[in-house]
Length: 106
Image (cartoon, rainbow, N blue to C red; front, side):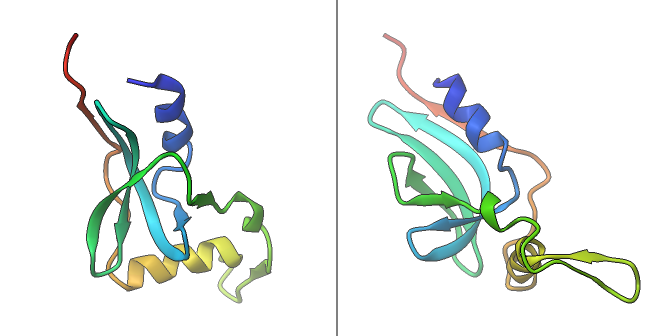
């Protein structure tokens, strides 16, 4: 398996991610003989494997944007709002990183 790809995806485990134009939660990595995949959880659609090649956008750039501190002392920004949106709409955080190897031994 491609260790550098696994580590890249693991660094964004449970974070909101854009897959083309759809918001999802990044939950794992998979690989088979044909391709490498990012595993995401969509609200109401469940787990989906998307090719690692392109169309996925990590949302690091919005961390800290639109920051406010609530009256109760909670820290909110655009990133945490998207995370909450996923949680509320059926894409909860996973307990463990999913890593699937379906390559055949040569």
